[in-house]
Image 1 (cartoon, rainbow, N blue to C red):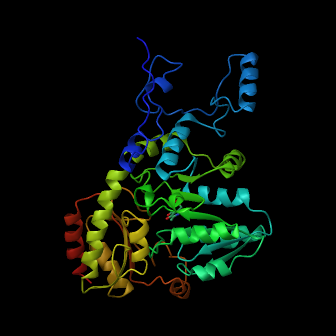
Image 2 (image 1 turned 90 degrees about the vertical axis):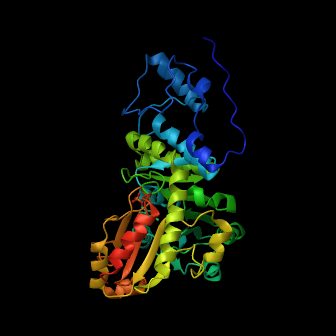
Image 3 (image 1 turned 135 degrees about the horizontal axis):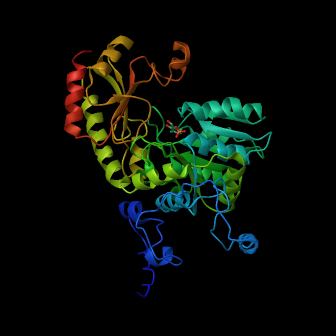
Length: 411
Ligand code: PLP
């Protein structure tokens, strides 16, 4: 039967359609050399790839030098299952290229390790993921790379911290963990462009459904794909999305650093991504309802959620986000023990680190994420004993509200 020509994709697909079809080679393209054409990307579970004979090796090497082949040589250099999910992620974030890593931390550390020389300086905003902070303040410091931590939302302080010819990156999360602060991406991008400093946003809490930093002029986006992108609490992965020559250098560096994603995880990630828009929109709606409910509850002292008008970054969030995400942080009006009683009384959310999956997860930050910090160190970071981070899943919103209602009675 004659092949049908590849159907051209319509130009401006919306996110839910991109999540399903983005980056996928349609039938004719993927079937060029084969009789079969599976709808779903197979898992290329192999450590290496074979050659028919030495002439085949020569032809491959010549084609590779010209950038004229997508054949693979060795799985640390490349894998078709990984490349399939990279193409989808690049489309979703609006970048030229996405590079997949074994974890979110591998993505963040690889960008910095592979591009910063000794003597360089970076700026990071506060209230960021604790291991990112630790990597910058201890590991990079050992390599002679200094980090200035600037207050989130203070753009004058961020610009003033730039050291001419030394500062290479401005690094921020948006929204942040755990206080859901939202960076003004256009403003950060403007500072970076004017001062010749690359901007990098960890957009894990937003997902490309709610926010696309590259569209605001940010240079690089990273995600812990472990969270919403995978969406099922069953994999670890990370991704960097960007444009231009920097991405080619990053891909080369991944070969040396070895922080590649496993093909089976890449398969799970691609599968999870297809429902990204559905899941995230549901989680946005549920988290908004939970935040409003908690905000009005007498046993809750304070709620952080960018969708509430009381949040310090509500206006910025409204301007640049299409949804406010699925995480709500709040302080119970009570002691460490009273907060623990409330968490133990909940029936639906699991007590666990992480967020973004279909199951709701909850944690008392002082006991889990910041367990190794002294009360003074926690206070300096604003982490109270009664702080709770609630990452909503895709359960029925009313069931979660009912569960909160009965559990708050024990406070
Ligand atoms: N960035 C943010 C905002 C996170 O919350 C996390 C993990 O919780 C990471 C990065 C690290 O990701 P991973 O656990 O996939 O290494």
